[in-house]
Amino acid sequence: MKTTKLLASALLFATVFGTAKAADTETLEAMKAQNGSVKTVLMDVFTTPAGNVDRVNIIQSSGNPEMDERAVKSVSKYPYPKRKTASKYQHTVTFETNVEVINN
Image (tube, rainbow, N blue to C red):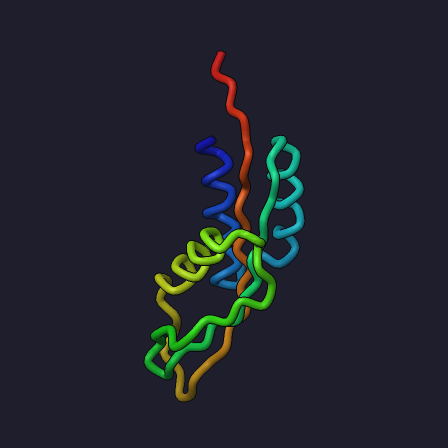
């Protein structure tokens, strides 16, 4: 279970900071291979010139309002760079659910 949370956290971090484009697909496949169900939330994040989140628009919902809310909170807590004008970022947040962990 900790591994799946780390994968999801790593994917979120990489997506927010734009460091994982090709790795996104590989990470999703690795998460699916662990007998889990993957839910994805796609959103536009609009920031002020100071780097604060102004608003978040959900483009593609996960189908679960609680997960959508968690995704919005997760992208809202990261520091965005200060810019001369307001900015728009697009993020994908991925959750893995229904994973059975068997301890031997």
